[in-house]
Image (tube, rainbow, N blue to C red; front, side, top):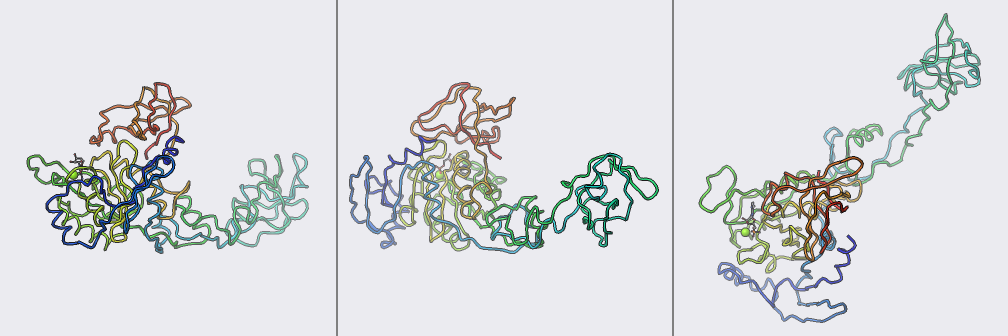
Length: 467
Ligand code: AMP
Ligand code: MG
């Protein structure tokens, strides 16, 4: 992947939100609509400056910096510059599974709270049990949850249960399996172990913060929060994310199809991905290829949601209206990523809310979400890094067949990953087209072939193992 990072130096940085040198031909409808908003964008002249390493810097006054054709790492870096507002919400612990902690969580107690036994057996003085067969006088019982265990003196033993407090005087435990009881005394047949005493605070001390802001509340983290005395927790409020599908050809599943229309799938898939990442999707009605309808939907989404995801309309075509409206009226930060599938996405903001314009091809939208939107959501919700939520694990796989890469682009082919012996192996099946969503279901991983790299059967490559 080092090759991908180094590609950053060759990126053409375009500091204009327009494309003055080669504007896409706007639709009539679009020209009318934009004519009415004469002041919204600048059409000032463009200055082009040659800088080192052959990079072209285009400066456009009043416009926002926008980069074109960026490597994935750079796309993520740019996206991470615009976050959603992170807000807290208090939840009962038993409703907090999978949520992200807003603040560090302090322990209200020592854990263990007191010295206690790790075994059912006998609390004894280690010195009394040096020889096998020692006989000790039974002085009472220490039970979990009850107080008043007797003092253990020389030559004495106290019956003890797992988790019960260690009686004063005792310094070791003999397992019940290593003892024989008879007439008020016990014969010790095995070792007396100080290590069977769980010492106060050996796991955690009061005030310690083992759960940090941004940690996901996994089942064991929920258990730990309870151990520390918390019945409610402050978690990151789930961001609400508008999901807007754009395209004249789209019909919601379940409705009658007209000629040349297709069932719309992306808003369902993207919403599902948003949910998996801990957000609340707000799927709006499908938008026709109409700038005015799209503007209305974006305005509404910016009012009511924390971020916006659109599907479709971000390529070079005349009807790619998401790209057009973002160029003309939005704040666009990058367009196009050097990856396949999923090359055409854009990112920026609309009325101050982060906006991802995902490609319409179903595989592309899933892949871009997985490698760009998901890590951005994690970062934005404060759960980035190893403890954060994600849709995939990065692994090394040995290919069972050759895999063709892509010129200048990170190539993410669908692969099936499985354990074989002591290594992970991968293979492909089904047609790999970016319109074939079945390929995402039939496989469970994505290759991470660096730009201009193909691999042979038996080569080991980086891959994403999808959850
Ligand atoms: P576009 O990005 O709008 O040029 O669309 C690229 C391809 O994806 C076209 O074949 C569209 O019909 C298809 N497509 C666009 N949006 C969706 C959607 N929401 N669900 C399913 N397919 C779509
Ligand atoms: Mg379209």
